[in-house]
Length: 460
Image 1 (cartoon, one colour):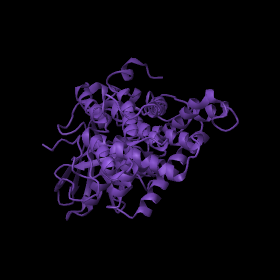
Image 2 (cartoon, one colour):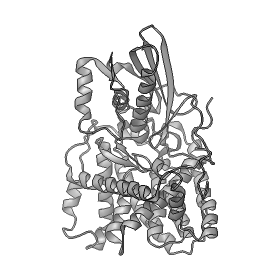
Image 3 (cartoon, one colour):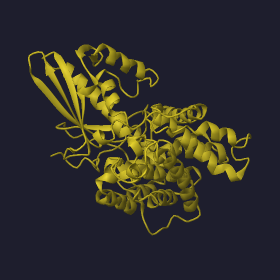
Image 4 (cartoon, one colour):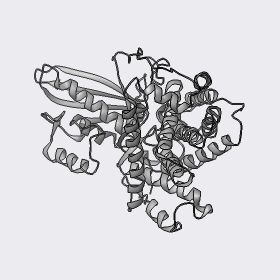
């Protein structure tokens, strides 16, 4: 049995580049992760002595139960064909998949042509692998009749683990190691560094400061572009629920002047920005995993709120926002999980809300304790949030849920700014509470579409 896959080792440093990745929708755990796993397996299969003549993929647990709605099958096929989420053009994917269907062949790893049909991706909705609810097994048959099998787990945020692989090295030295909110406050007290600066300093273990700034600017640009692209689109989202995009119509209905000219519409603008991102995600478009795809709209909406409506907003402030959010996200990855298949939606929208709340407090001039307070408030009022997507699609209630997470994050930040940073419930305590709640939550409420709205709303 594998070690507890829900937890990233407390002593392993996490880079901001692990929290924010640019990929495709609709799901980080069910689309991005499986594509990465399939790509990795294809490279390993091509390195075998026996020439591959067939490949199959078995999907288990949550990947099987909601995989079709999350495009797990097509993501897996694309990964086997040599595509990675960062390089794939979402607009080109349908034609590429159609070519595989028509020809009956797949170019494994983009190199070796092998016979392939869509039913070579096999769903096992009643089987859960013991190590993690998001499990998948690949098998390739060689020309000599030999078989090679690898099992992978998609553990949230697009991250994957391969069964039997050695644990990630933990000997990378960062200047300010931390594994709790208390650690961050202690380091800040000792060094007079803000949380964002603690993370920025640690990032020097991976790359030069200018490269980190360039990465953060690219993430910010991708988030912004996703909002703008989502507002420009219209029509019905794929999947069969007949959910019509709303962002474009909402933008047209809001005051024609700049956001903020009508104070009564401020939260409508925030909702618009979150809607735009998550409609793009639901359509399989280019999004930033932050920290997951299902919650991809929260941080961009709150960041746009800062850049548009907070006086004195700067590019440096946007970087501070993202670095602070990353610090908070790292704690959830270390001490709990950001996988809805393990934690329910409290592990996705709840975590994104917590990250955005702390990040906004930081750029509003908050102290480290006010930032920690804001992050705690953001999660405290998302505890118990279930993941129950109708039809297994990242649409209802997922899209609107991001608007609520964004608005709640802003409220949490301003509540924290009204205090002095002293509060009863610590961020560490609320993260542990989320973990315990997730463990106690029944499986049917954790991205299986077997409970909640998924069974109480008749699909259109």
